[in-house]
Length: 130
Image (cartoon, rainbow, N blue to C red):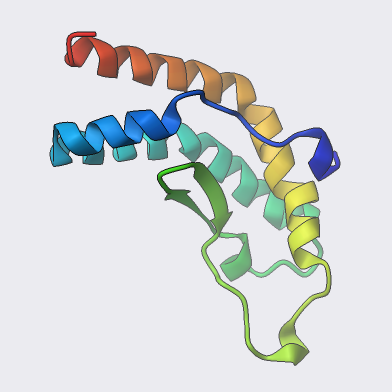
């Protein structure tokens, strides 16, 4: 699946939600980040599995993934962060990782991510009287 065909799961109002939690309570914002990591964990696990099986010469260090959270997005990326040694660099590795691992991992879990996000937002709303 080419990267341009599948860009991700978009949530309207995500930045506003982050901002509201930041103003409301630091503990609430931390709880939201924890819950968002749990939602993305299924994609992370699938990406780790695909990285080992789909990319030749993939080392275990590069197949390990992490979940990151910013004010604008939640993402899955390799734990390892590149090398400055030109001899160790692989041309087009980032594109291969996206097309062979990350996009398929999200596509395989898009329904569960949607359900989990819906459930999370419902719990957050009920807990805060919305």
